[in-house]
Length: 343
Ligand code: PHE
Image (cartoon, rainbow, N blue to C red; front, side, top):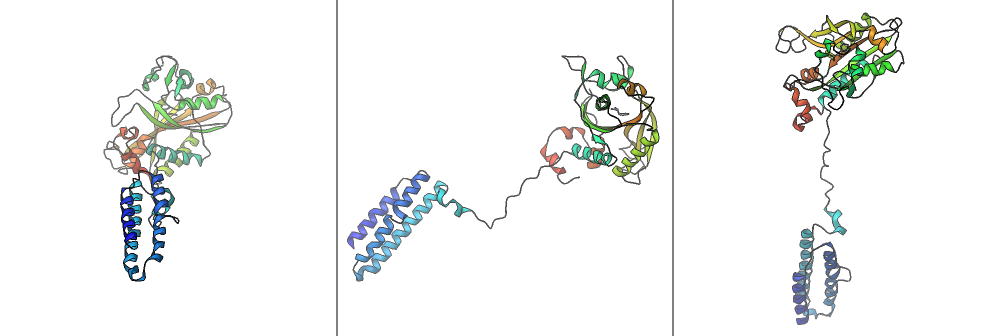
């Protein structure tokens, strides 16, 4: 009995001074003391040799030693971050799962998708083109020869290394690329980013986004243009919205018009958004100029067509109540994540 107690004391000291620095040493500790052939089990077996009158005392000492060895092991395991062998025991299956962070679409993309989906229902397909354009596709083919005063309507960024290249000022350049392919009829939408050299402020930016549309076939008339845009406005802004066309000028369309809708903020009674007029301009449009058709090898005697173009940022600002255009391009996550559930 004396023997047993001295042995337990020595074991305790050894356990207390065993260095455990990593998972491997921890495992060695476990095998040496708590394993099936470990020292704790072995010394428990010595109970058999203890005289009956001393069994109670010996049992208590052995039990206490066993608990000491086990709790030391648990403490070391905590410190080592959990041994690999029993790491699964640390998973609490009753905890609720981690939420998957949801991404969100950019408000300009949301608005673009809305516009595109309405025209897609009328059979329009989507076409894209380069943002760095040559002079011909951005201007020349669109009936804007060199030195044409209307070039000043769009403050153009020129590429320094090559004065024939510009950052496209509108996606009408993609209309030219589609017409040049020579496949008729054409019923296309051209969404994309465009650039104009304007001072950046809450109301204007040096780049923005457009959706333009083009329809070319035999016998396309201004009535088709109006019906198409009426449909768009009803789907986009509701059936109570009124529409008006104002004569306008674009070098690439003749006749040309701008389309206004009754202000969707005040309903037409006059507010700051519509500058008290009750109307908001939303797009430019017209019948494709015969020169433009000829420039793309389409016979203007046989084919006619209409085109239209609208900005995306302004309707997006009105729809989502955004009062500063710069917010769209600052990539501030606090702004962007607000659009998670918007359609
Ligand atoms: N390209 C014109 C613009 O950017 C819009 C437009 C397109 C007007 C097609 C008429 C026809 O302002």
